[in-house]
Image 1 (tube, one colour):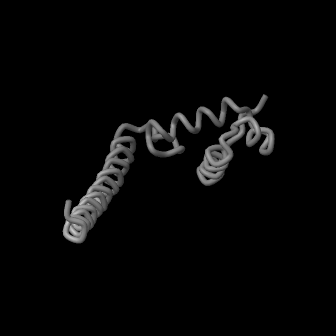
Image 2 (spheres, rainbow, N blue to C red):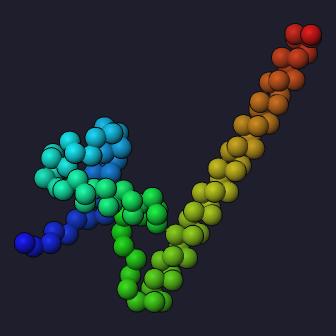
Amino acid sequence: MTKKQYSAEFKEQVIKEAQETNNVALVARRYEISPSTIHTWIRRKRKTGSVSTLPKAKEARYKAMEKQLKEVSTENDRLKRLIAEKELELSILRELRDLSNPR
């Protein structure tokens, strides 16, 4: 039995479909892939944030991990700013509500 190689884009598409339909078996049948393969891809994506494997060479592996860490940190900062903005909006709306409807 030969081992098939799938592109990262294909894996991302399959994972997205599996999550949207909430049915891995159906997606696996559609693409003629084992459901356990899709589950492995989903698990790897949750763990590392990417479906692609890390390189075997130590230096390349460190660089890939540093790149992923930087991307995650940037996303985390962006989400923190978004939450702060939403909290401020909620605070302002609560103050307006209390001013227009005193208890």
